[in-house]
Length: 140
Image (cartoon, rainbow, N blue to C red):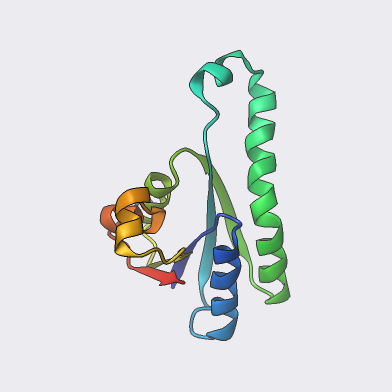
């Protein structure tokens, strides 16, 4: 199975990894894993005056902060994964990556807000599910 793991480095990502570790059916060398993290874009006016190498370094550093503990987790499980970081809106990037990559499953953590909270604040998970044709496993 080709699995996309969406990660933001929060406690919800850690909870999702713990769920994977506890459920053998989702974790194992017989699956192909890609971990995606979306780094918020630096505002266009600021990005225009920054050195491109400095900007790229910023994006890479932010992604590595999220990927480092996940790499450790997968290495302990003796599992290889591909790591992809993109710049942009998290929901849009995750949904597009899942669809374009023809993944069988997208696994992501969720804050578990109520419907009212989602209405007021929005939710990356809600937006991903609305725009993604890939099945989504939400871990709360």
